[in-house]
Amino acid sequence: MSYISDTSPAQKISFVVGLIALSLVARFVWAGGVEEYFNPAKQVENQIVEVLEERPGDLALLRAMEDYFPLQYDELLEAMTYVAQRDASPDAVSQAGSAQLAQFMASHRTDFALAPQQSLDAVLTAERKLLEALRTEEPVYCADYLFGTLIPTDPLSPESNQLMGEAAAARVQAMAAGRADQQLRMKATPRDIASLSDTMRAEGASDMQIAVLFENGDPATLSSAEQCDSMLQMLRSMEKQPDARRALLTGSLLAW
Image (cartoon, rainbow, N blue to C red):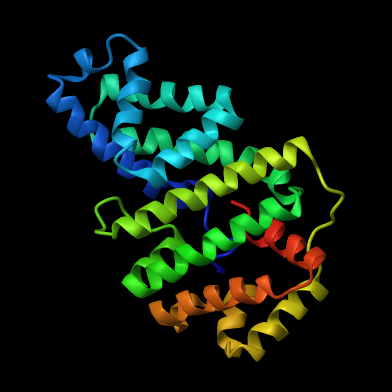
């Protein structure tokens, strides 16, 4: 049960969307009710952006979608609007947005895997910086992120929240780059994984940590800090791989 392969896009993205939903639902109340809030329809986008301007990381995600995937960006807003007009609870709006974003992410997995090296490197760097911030702030939050169990009410720091949105935005940009300029690239092979594992061991990773990541070892054998450290060691070791192998590993192991 590796947290690389067994965490769904819906779990990973739900935290970001949940934060958006909480802010929006608060504004429903301030605006005098959902009916007034969503009349006219264009107000939806304006109000969402207004909310997100106070959250630069989340705004980066939405802006990346709007710039590179405008049709799916509109579908996201429509899905959240539709549910909010009928059920203004944070959970309902969050679930609608999460489901839409998860579908979007899953539909571009191949684009992500075949993205140019520079775009994949940007994702790798963004994920490492995010995990480093979460590890410093609270190892439990870092582990929860890996397993997709963060919840919107977890009191993350502004830095972590911003890095969360920026990491997701980097993925969207990589998907767009992969669609526009597909690279001829195969999937990561057992030899690539073995090379990565050797680098991780040289960096201090234990056999148990590697087993949890790549061999279906039981994550419960590791503490939250060890779970977070193992993923950080993996990302740092990936950064040390030659270009071609790094691209293969990033496209294979970091796809949502």
